[in-house]
Image 1: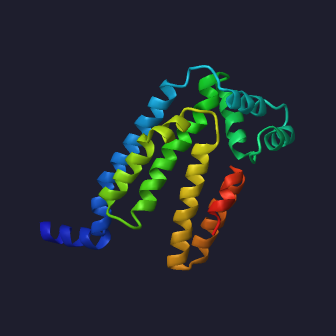
Image 2: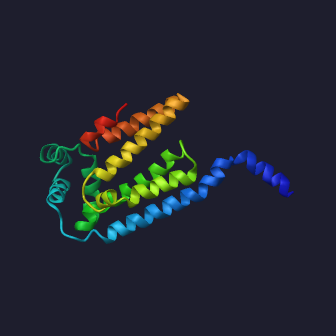
Image 3: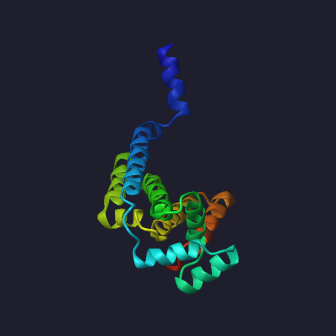
Length: 195
């Protein structure tokens, strides 16, 4: 009976997935811990550019938010929309900076998932851990700026482009188009990630 179970498991769950699963759990746990650590360090006073983010997020209407995002800070409005929701839930420094921690944690997971296309799960996990623990990147996880969202959309765009090039399926090309569109409305530098 044991051998029948093992044979069925081998067919249903490829070896790559069986070995990658613990690493994915580790990366997800570390990403969550880094996000919690980032939130714990968010109560310091705002930097000048973060006050601009707060000013944009508190715009009275969505059209005004878009206009302020483009004119006051030369960024598309996607990050500021997320910041507006977070600010409405908790109107302080932590509420303003919280989306960055979430996007940083998601970007860490995306780096792992993208890395598994090229390397073993362990190597992809190391890359994701280095990404989230890098001092420069972690600093962006605790600032009210769109850089973690840029990292997330860039990684997702590269990953979905890779999938689309390999499979040439319409669904993968649509995922790439969605990831690229999200990147374009997140940060003006994303234009350099379009292939």
